[in-house]
Length: 243
Image (cartoon, helix red, strand yellow):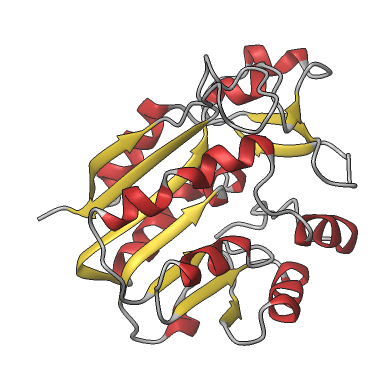
């Protein structure tokens, strides 16, 4: 992996802010349907949370009954806070694209929740190929990413109005967004990647898309939705290894 692989959350202030984040606003839509989506194809077993951050998604999978649930991340700051919040789970610091600390483990479910938003386009394939090596033969990979539209509209949990250049961004370009549910309001730099680009790299990595979801906000939910009822902020891919 090249030296330009950088986790924007790998600093103390941002890690502290992110550690307090659970499932507010637009984030609620990212997690709302996951128990049903995952439960249709995987009934327990062991799970790998790739890009676990401060452990929010790892704890989520653990509460769903996956045992063990192992979280890995390239940010030492994030791993430190995950271990502080959840000392009973397994967390490992890894180098970008290198899952060798996992040994010969195989997982029934591998999740990558928001992880690929921060991985450069040139390195997405390498990471997916690495994940495939640790997937059980009958297992699934769940990839949850930001749709390009999230960087061009306003949301309950995000603002992009100060970054008009996002509207001209193409697949693989850097885009900026501000999170409204944390104390750290510095812009986050993500990598915009289209559905067509993701499907291409999934195929190159040896996966097939078993299912695809776009979660919309519902009028009766306990949030003041902005764009969420008419535009889906997230894309959820359920992948299987090609036969």
